[in-house]
Length: 94
Image (tube, rainbow, N blue to C red):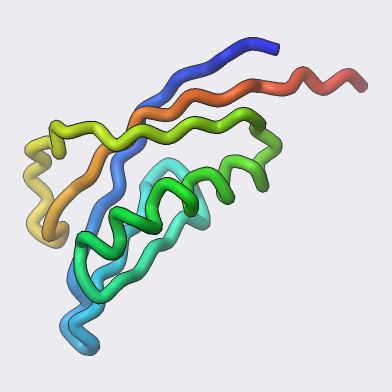
């Protein structure tokens, strides 16, 4: 099994109708995280990333929050959190 590495970014917006925060990842389909504030979301994001990757068939998943939050110029996005991922790719034999 080969260890793969990747970076993902979570785009966090505030929903004006409820005041809640919503985080999505453009490259991990199905990753949605919500919370009352960004700190609450930061507690939930790593586990949510693990669940999405496990559902995709990855194992031995490590998620590390990067201190550099990025400087994306996306007006609809309140803030961005970036995470370093490491995981094992399982070879599928047909």
